[in-house]
Image 1 (cartoon, rainbow, N blue to C red):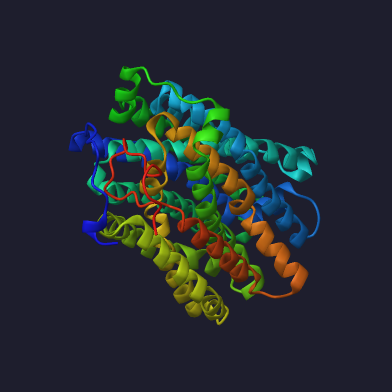
Image 2: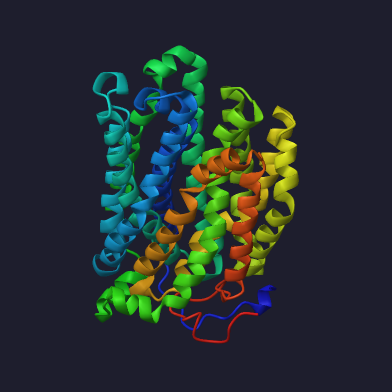
Length: 444
């Protein structure tokens, strides 16, 4: 889609000044960084965590740890159901201040769990409980942060500014990975298995406090404040499902592709490279860190391009590119360290057009009164079923078939689902958030 084909805004909402916009970006992105910092240290420290908190052989313990990672995602829809309607009623700011505290507190507590040798089965039980708390809080965090960002950003540059939310995603994930790698190199394998793996988890506390401080000092979004002044009410759950099922289905389908790729690349890849490709633990950590640094550079560029070209062309480019290239690039990664770096970087760059435009695309599909809830529920339900389970499914498929390319085939199937959902998504680039994108003609 060209710039001239992007729909004109029907009404221009109040816009924040640049200083306020920068604070909103920082407040949103830091919460996302805290969430993904936890995913980074868990995914990149899974071999240490499994050895410390789970019984059994190494392979069994790692599988248990990956399954525990997936458990937190099963709770996310409950978080979306709780926090989403609350954010539409009380405001985005109040909910986001609470969710970041819950997330960071639970991450801190994981680093304090006694080992299986000390307390037996209570160790994995506590880990599961804390992962559920994280999943519940994350059910409100991402939808709220994306909504907060989208409602503060100007219509014509929502893609560009929204990309910084995902910059926070990769920054948090990279920071967690770099910490785990740094302590691994500094302390050595024996100390990491003993107690060193716990240190990165303790960093979550100050991150959460800084994020809560930034969010508590922000006003709610101009769009939400205008709606509150008019006395508009958020819809009940039954009405939300009845009146907004089309955007919820579109978001759910796109999120299948988005998060199967996301969690396979970012969360499962270190384990895959180490256990399936034969890289050393440190090499398996270095590969995604290099890839994520490349992705971070291109995120704002892709966000800006989506403002000019539209969201749909960016998603189509990414989905088709991954569908065609994922198997050859997985085969390239199997050739060794250099091939793994090149293959991961190329996969990451193909994924960037999706990642950069999430917070610009999905919130704009819903009206203000239902935006937080509609986005949070659809996003988290799809993520819980297909995103967080991707590492465990990829590992199980390899174990069942013996084929090391099964995660690539799983990503291809997810991309096909995403292309089907994209067929029914209207273009939202340049639209006012007061528009109803599903009220006009269906996008071709």
